[in-house]
Amino acid sequence: MNRIGIVTGAGRSYEIAVMTVYQPTEAYAIATIDSVSRIVWDTINQAP
Amino acid sequence: MCRKHGHGVNADDAYADALTHGRSFTGASGAGERNDHVTRIDSRRDLTFGTAHFYGSTGGQAIPSVAPSVAVAMAVMATVSGYWIVYASAPLPPAQHRLAAKIAAYVESRRGTVSVAVHSDVTGYTTVYDPRREDTASHGWRRRSR
Image (cartoon, rainbow over all chains, first blue to last red; front, side):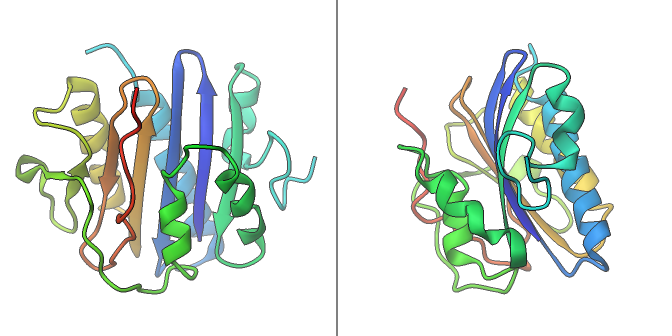
């Protein structure tokens, strides 16, 4: 499962692409992508 | 709004709570039924980030290796199963370094292979986590002129 997105708001503006392969299940792949997305949201563009 | 196919802003369950916090998300996915919205992303002028993956990928199958057109390999960020390519000059700003490290740590805890690319419109940096086990279509990606 692959996913790309444009995310804006709260001082953040970025594009993200996540590719997954060899994931055990679709749900597992979704969880992987969701978690990566959350990490990016929580981390990106934060002040040094 | 169709959650299954990602129409509109509410494209992904992962972003449902984001919407409640004033964020917006326009999404697209490869592999199978969700592949149909890639063209909508492509239509955004000057957006090359991300689309390269989908042109080169068929639902995660391996694709011919291509070299990034502009890249600085960050050896200091080498990890067990992958490496980072940053489309900017070293050293990385602290925020980008922090982002890369966190994603790498998480991805390595997961099964399978995961490639992640993030382009910040704020900093102009494109950061790619590119596991060696899969050749990702980095060719043609570029840093936007700002």
